[in-house]
Amino acid sequence: MTLPPPRADVVLMDGYHSPRLDVKVRLNVNEAPEGPPAAFLEALEREIHNSGLNRYPDLSATALREAIGAHHGVRREEVFCANGSNEVLQSLLLAFGGPGRAVAVFSPTYALHSHIAAITGTAVLEAERDEEFLIHAEAIEQVMARGAAMLAESDPRGAFGTRRAVNPVITFCCSPNNPTGRLEPDDRLDAVLARAPGLVVADEAYGQFAPRSALDRRGEHPELVVVRTFSKTWSLAGLRLGYAVADPAVIEAMERVTLPYHLDAIKQAAGRLALGFADEMRARVSRLVHERGRLCAELSALGCSVVPSDANFILFSPPVSDAKAVWSSLVEHSVLVRDVSSWPRLAGYLRVTVGTPEEDDAFLAGLRAAL
Image (cartoon, rainbow, N blue to C red):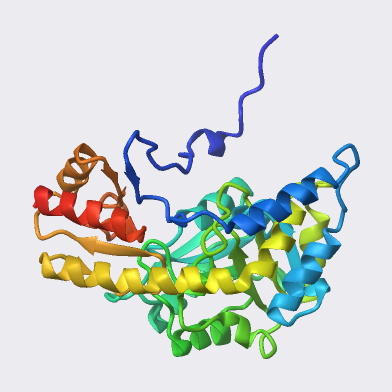
């Protein structure tokens, strides 16, 4: 028997990954440095014990969606839940992307926006951010122009035989942006919302670390989709739970492309229970924001070029020519950060997750030795 080959475009794709090395201090994947509260774990244990795992979970995740809706002041019908925010993005692209359609991204940004688009057969229109790593008006015009130059695969000619442009059905606005940590100013987001012809997805995986959110603008912009995760501020990266807040018509389309019972009962219970510990979450965020400020100051004092951050990580360039050598030296000191120096426009840069004060001290000590 001859096995069928995978799709030709899939063969050419690189998977998304980051190194997992045996180190004492792991500051490379933007995880929360503290675990969830003990009271949450005790409540989840009781919930699991009484959940009846021999039964299928709630198909619509009703209680979880209602809890998230109450947390944000929206209706259940405006909330979609999935296995991490990446599956939320995948569901968006399954529902609205595909052959003959395109998305817009502004680099450098979260690589999975383009990666998931490619997996779903969606074209990617890309433009660069400005020198401060923010979206600018020219970039919006550039992606529109590139769409105008691209023919739709499924219907290259529209009415009267005219050539049909491929406008982006989704424009991704990662804010705070990964890997730069920059929060888009209001006027930049306004420009995207005014010019983008389809959905505008504000990926707010790090939104709670920033002073404002696109959630406040949804009432004025039904095309706005806000995506969030429980991985960072809720300390539940190992659980894999994310959600979108969007117009009910968008939510309904996403539900049509998900598999039945895709969200297990334990995950639904954990997300619902976590929302009851919002005060603890906010205290955790406050500590990390304070620690972020200390790290930025220490990095600057060491001569590093530091990009202003509104996330739980910092993009910085060491004052030496070989960032990869600095990364390797940190590993020798049992500290792992993210080497992004090979990414477009990020030559010479590393990214460090804000950890506990003790973890950050170990990182700074390793960095001083490396320099």
